[in-house]
Structures are given as C-alpha cells and as structure tokens.
Length: 129
Image (cartoon, rainbow, N blue to C red; front, top):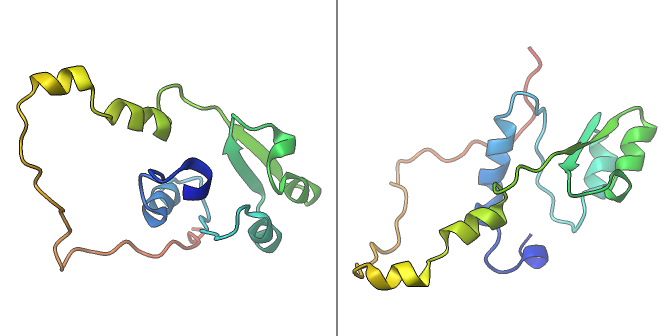
C-alpha cells in the first residue's frame, strides 16, 4: 500500500486492518497478500463474493472474471463521503492558523503497549455455525 499511496500510508498496520474486517459478521476470510494485486490469492481461494470500493468499475476489479465464471459475484460498495482514510488524515493534519494560537506542549514521546498486552489473534476463516 505504501508504494501505491505514499510514505504516510497505511495509517493502520495490515494486521489491524485485517482484524477489523474479520470482525464483520458477513466476512468469512481476510487474507493478507504481498503481491501488487490479489490475483494469485483469488485463484487459490476462489471466493464466492469479491468486494471492492465503489470508486472502481466492475471490469477493473482484479479477479472479477474468475469469481463470476465460477458463479460468484463482484460487489462494489458505495464510498461514504468524508470517511476515507485520506479524508481522516486531512482532518487530523495540523491547522497552521489554529496551531499558532495554541500553547506548545511537549510530546509524550513514543507510547507502547504493556509487555503483557494481548497480541492480535491471527486472521483466519470463521467457523460456520
């Protein structure tokens, strides 16, 4: 993602993003891949549903032809205005006019989780119950 969107991205690491997606009830599998596209993963997993943001056209979604040829579907999800990572980062950026009015405070420094904090569980298939 960094290669595609720049050095300041991703904001959340890949495992945090995968864990959030895996928590969704409708999601059966979240897989992390290292290639530029998920084509090899799609060929291996053969999903029934392939989901991509609504800023794509169906014919531009990598693997849509494989999924649809096997009887699956490609679903484009509407984007919610103002809720993209880019918009969140932009809103979080310091406003120079406001920053001049605020007294400067020392940064708390690097924060880390306690040594005994739970580590995220590996992302895996959900059981069908």
